Image (tube, rainbow, N blue to C red; front, side):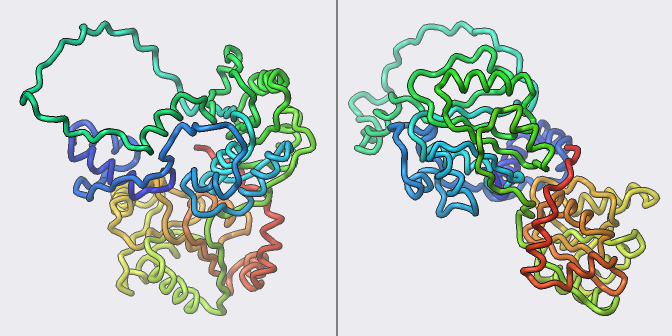
Length: 414
């Protein structure tokens, strides 16, 4: 259920209702001090109905694998990655988080025959081992109403088939990269090795994986990484021993709709910004300076939109904190800020990122990657730098060709 922010928000709200003294400070420490406690509870959709995936290790067709994973259709490049792995080719997939890189690995695992070994770096330190706790022997308990049949319905054909499948080997074997030194190879054929976030795997762990892969008979290798400029790609090739890989992803993927508007006056620029924010809310608006950010916030407010300006010092910390708290509590249509300083916006990206004459295309590209909005629009007026103005004035095809030369966004500090 990655990406279903409404689902996770409702569950956090339910936890806050259950125990506000514990979860209130916890969520505040995670950057959500104003989380509402009265949201309706949402049930998760029926994704991954039989996880871990079992029931045979044969190669599945792409449409069948998509249905098993709960997807209606493959995203761009996912089916090609899966078919290349099924043909025995190594694959290097460059995909920023949230654009389907891990899903491509799952799909490739299902369309290749044999088991799938999934290697990924640890997200954080492991918890300490829990000592075994002795449990009392079970004691018989008489039914409260003798003679009344149980309420649970007997298992039907689908449940019986699922129980039989549970005795079969699992399709996916997940292992942390730093445990490969003690990892015991699985029984049965391994048809694919997937390395998620490959650029974060240590050099020694990658060397162990190369040895393990050879011991498994040399199955195809799929590396998933969210950035890989030419130098980084050469390192990954050497570190993991890729053999004539298929390149997928590659160029920078903004992760949402990318657009630009060219205007001829400052007034038209402000009018375009107000119209866009009114159509796509909530919005993050980034201006070249604090002064322009405050003017934009005032203009949005005058147009009937709930807007506030956030800026680092010398803006009063209390005022900046109040604006950010209102944004996180979803009480604003727009949060306006100057370029060069991006506050923690919360877990969910906004509906719109509006860039008011960014200083360069590189700055705009990195801002798009950092905010993760559903729609990112650059507005260029008479004061825009030449490369930004040229980008905004170009047609869709020209912008697409220009994006191909951007490469991946620069690494960001988490």
